[in-house]
Image (cartoon, rainbow over all chains, first blue to last red; front, side):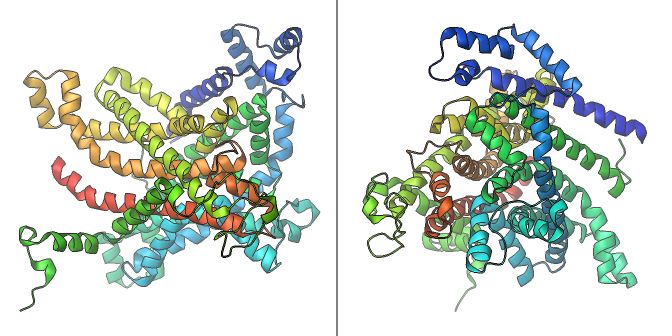
Length: 313
Length: 293
């Protein structure tokens, strides 16, 4: 078992290696010259050269890569090209809103989608099933930002129930924290929920055809137990896989949602960095997100043995 | 004597009856396809649909609510929202179609090679895994950040994250197919690799590729809109649904119609593509399974 975990972790390393190379290259094969962009429109060639040396861009590319990796290992993500602040510090400052949003969205989506999917599978063919399927397809097609604005319009502008934008740390009060988080969570959560509900339904539907379900029902086991204990556990593998794969969508959605609701998180940091062509920040954030994504997928893989003890690598 | 229409075998049906049966059996696909066709018509016939110049500013008419002269109202510069939305469909559909087409071609090529040439398979899949490890939007954003904002760069930025998915799909099909007897017999008859790939493997990949293509297109339309919304996509001079909504975001309270209509069209387009894809998949899936047996 431990060997399996170690092997899976080792398998992730080459992928992360490629990600690091990719992120490194992405910035350096750019047509523009970062030094020139930072220097501005009226810079002299000497200025540009000075900046280039300062950024270490004059060294040969494999030396640059070596320095880059060494810094990474030490946890140094470089400095923002515009503010000269350490990227790591910027990321740490913006971490909380993003994590809060991601965790609440995941919780909301999983808690809502799985029972919904199970219900739809149990009552397959009925009106409820149809409704869930329509919701699943429609929900997945709706753009995140549009849904966000619809909810803002409905709940903040018209009904004045919730704040329009902004983020309040829970250290400054639990209620405002929740209030500011509700709309973003529901916006992103609904879309994630649509995807999950659909996969859950399909997976549970397939499992419900099995003999052991029929046995359980014949034994007189209560439907709730059959569904949530027997069926769900066996249907879990594709569902958990989708949670993992959908995490990439979640990250993209977080970026957009933070923009719509003006949450000062990593997503906003990324967008601002993109607009300012601040390559260091873009590199750092992309790396962080990719690492988290890889970690999530690793956890997903490891969780398979929990649900299906037959899976042993 | 009335015979149940479904009981009549296919060969005895008239043309009209065939169509009716198809619609009856594949409602989502037909609905999706129809809606998408409407969007395409809107995009191609934009100048003839009672539109005005979408970039023409008319500050006198700022922020009018939807009404007789301006069906979707006007925006903060007095531009007609209806025209902008209709013209905006051009960008979205163009980007979606091109990304889907190019991704399919590139993914098909790489997937065929990867599935069949064992030596390259490992390397190719590692690279694909690496690309897939980066979240889609971030990858697209990073790419656009490094280049000038233009429709062409957006298209390239969208192709990169979507290609690995197609590669994986094609590769998985090829992996199954290459063990089949017909491949072995073709090789025994002396077929060289290109002929094998093109003549024997390719036809079996078309159907799943088309289905995947629809999902790629839906994804591309959504991400292009998201990029434009964040300011990292289509340049602001060209109206795109994401652009329009980005400019309108400060006007949630006073002019919500500016956000409502572009988003509505965007959602409808993506929905239609998804419905079409789902319907296609349901239609083609059993056929693929039957063929492989």
